[in-house]
Image (cartoon, rainbow, N blue to C red; front, top):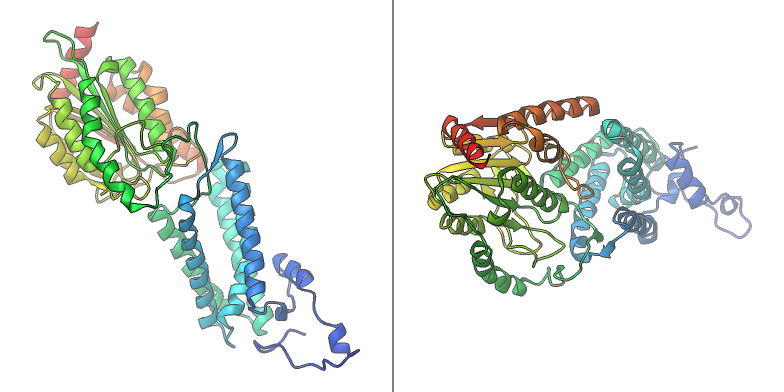
Length: 462
């Protein structure tokens, strides 16, 4: 019979007593709970050992899986480790919710024991889903894990308290969903390993704020050096200049995408000798000047000094996480960088004096940038509608879905940027429908005058 109260019942502990013989096995009862069967809740004592042991197992599994995900060039990267505290805090808040709502009351410590036992299963499930589940079934698999966790807590609380705890379980589930949502919105993505080719320049002092000032102080000189390398050919024919901006350095996909975009535009518009990249990348602080709003403003002024502003065209590609403010996330370890807003981007372009602009933004909610930036001298191509997310922003990818569809597949053979966008939009819609995700609805604005200028530039090159 299940215990009726939170505290273990008093028993005869004299030598040879029957009660002593019936002392429950922690391992056996834990396995019963994890296989969703009622168990003796007295094994969830709330002791430090009952919480720490499964929590350490979960941590070891996570560290091992993270290492596997970054093979064959996995490098130890401890600087994101503090992000794990977000999930520790989330678990504690869930435990508090379970304890507060349970009737009869369950202590927070025993609720922590219950959740700690669940943690290794969640870590294993996340790894299996990430590695082996097709993308179209990922959402369904995650819902299955969430349902399993809810049923586990329902059975576990009943095993502890002796009665059904439906409302407590729902309260805990609500807190967990909120924590996951906030973690996603804040891009909390802890890692212990990273895949990189050259450790030189890696964030050896990422946590040291004293190192930030000299790094930032160097950026104007590094941008000046990049601008000095730009070569505009003689003559009056319009030419293109490419500027790339990878904002979020904690995931390599954005840096890889901007470098790939630079290659594609170089082949299409002959910008090889007129390319400047601003890239945040956790793997190196040295390869390129860093991306920030201030750096972009400074770089655009430098590029403008090399252009014939009345005829040359700027190709500006940006890739990062985004929100509908509009805003692009800008982060590079501990460096104090501000996010890039639509107002800041518009002001940077105005201050540069660059007239003809093609702007491609690969980010969630990127369509929100169209309104503050559009003009007859501007083409804007964005990965998603203002109220929609785009996909493929994972650290194990080299390009986002938009990057694959637009830069890789559509741009090389398209007759124009409009044609490339139309082809990419169809491709992305088909992929998202196949995977069963909410459509990102890429958006674009084509300034009529700039389309004519691009046609003239193509004619002059032919």
